Length: 401
Image (tube, rainbow, N blue to C red; front, side, top):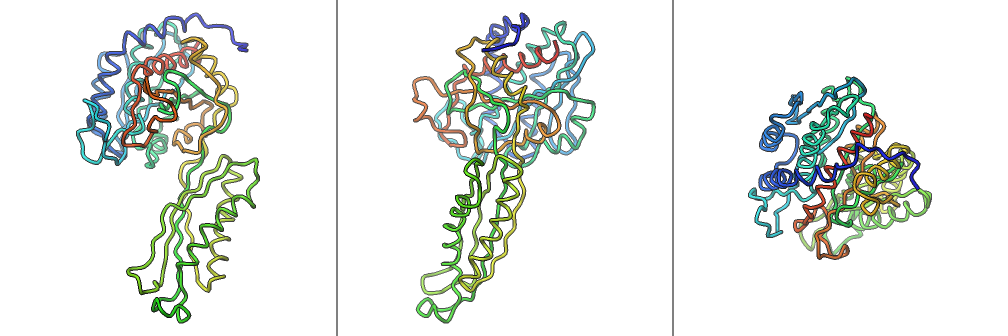
């Protein structure tokens, strides 16, 4: 049961978001047709700047990336709250059949970042109409390069947080949850994501005479099983960890024992302590397994995004805010974290805040049958964006009351 006094300023937000829905949908579809990847997204940046025209915002563009930062100053002085929407697409060939499907071969908004941009732009418009209720400033963070390019880190390095941000919030849409429902949790909500690369060196030879060679292939195969055993036996059952070998490469033909084999994969954990432990144990397992087969192995681990950790108070409060803004049926606590990763984690390392999920499973499709995020067939119910716009605005109004 909520202990928060209902905020009358949150009343009417959903109706306001609904009135903006044509704008929200139009911007989303424009960006969806023209997806861009990485840190340089000039068309997406131009669409955002156009959508913000006429609003009382101080807008700046990024220097090292095509980010956009827009600041709405409230009628009274106070702290700054940050709202984030990421901008980039993925290297996929879209296969949705949508009339506004991607027009760029090999590029698709398969993770819903087009909806994030559209919802954030509409929340700026919704909040601009409520400036007199804001005691402080709202910083709208339009971020490129979330999909593995560390876009949030680049923006922080350019001074995003230098003028003081007291709270931060981001939404992530998902086709795997009921449309319109906002869910959040305190503590870790998404995992760290590191990649590992293993180079196994043996001695090549004839496939018919393996005793005259040191075959790296059995060594590499043994490493796959050994790594799973390592997770189950060296990591506490109370600390989630995933080690996935996603690629194995060796050899050129059927009768040659290759000299080398390589393995590549990902490491996911939900705490920095477990992250360090897995790094240490993985290197040990690889080297000792190689030695058992008479081979030598070199291991490199490339650090990726850190664990996304919601502030305990803010993470819990988001659930209540969404219920106030839209009704209790549209808000629920998130029981378990996800092992995907997010570079909003960089912001949450510096500022108390939260990442929440917005369900957008298409109407008429069972949750179990809905193509997930990162699928070339993923679909999102656009009606859910009204709830996203209202939730963004509710967070800012509540933080700046």
